[in-house]
Structures are given as structure tokens and as C-alpha cells.
Image (tube, helix red, strand yellow):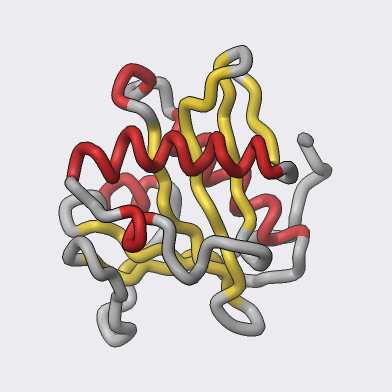
Length: 151
């Protein structure tokens, strides 16, 4: 498995492919809801490749001066159970810290919070979660100074 920061149009297409296959099709999410206003030039993507095949992804974008939001954490069904969700989260957190953000946030689907709690995220009940598709809980994590780049 190879973890990359998706820089090219082809790599971003790989991220969209994983999202559409694993989420949009499974949960009948229209393309306009899955690919939303956060996707685009100011959004950053982590992609896991199995040889040349995209199998897991997440995205992140600035959500304030000190906070970046990670979202669309998706692993293709055949690749679940291999800790690839944790892999993309850790890679995104490192990149976010390298860019000078002090906190990472997620809008976790209700029921998935334990995954994020294992990664150090805490629910912030006074902060409203946002999602057009699922009921979510807003969670945050303080980030450490970045380690040496692994990319």
C-alpha cells in the first residue's frame, strides 16, 4: 500500500472514485452532495493506493485560522479491517500540522465516534455539527508539532 498526497487531477479523481464507490452508491448520496462546496482548489486529499488502484481516502480544508477539518474518510469495502481509515487520518493530521494548524476537526457520523475517539478526538457538544446526509457529532483534536515528513 502506498499513501500519497493527491496533487494531480488523476489522483484527485482516485479520491472521488473511492468516495463514490463506497459512500455515494451504498448510501444513495447524490453526486452534488458527495462532491460539495469544500471540494476544489482549497481542498487537500490523502489517497491510499494498492499498486495503482485507489482504495482509501480522506480530504481536509481550512475551517478557521487554527483549525482544519478532515472529512470524507472512506475505505473501499474489500479493504476494510486493514487500518486504512487510521492511516489516512494520521497522514492528514501530519499534513495539517505541517501547514501550521493547531487543531483538526471532524464531523463524525453518529455511531462512528469511537473510531475518532481512538485517534484522540473529543466531542465538542456546544459546537454544531454540519452534514446534509447524516446525523453527525462535531469532534476536535489538538495537533502536535509535525514530525519529519513521511511523503
